[in-house]
Length: 143
Image (cartoon, rainbow, N blue to C red):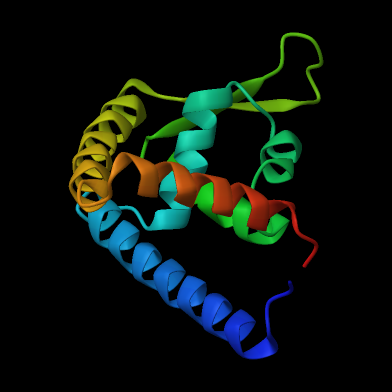
């Protein structure tokens, strides 16, 4: 049995609305720390994977290279990340998080974790597991 075009449309529109709502809420949380959501995502990647160069960073994100350069510049100006030459190849610049950046990231993550726990608390364990399975399945489908 396949999904009808009408049902597929309901699913896609629902996911787009949910994505938009999540994006708006994400910006509301990060804005309190002087960041937009994309800047926070880049900061998070550097916290998780750094030191890292911009080429590696753009490969793991859904952000255009030109936009990433602007975000890196902003995060550097704010003192949240710093750049340094790679010890292996002096031509390569590595990005790493500063103490200030790590502190802001940790505070923002506390807010995200609290919000996520509250948001998902109305789901039963079965609903949570079903949702995860469906999302994994949808991620595997070609766009």
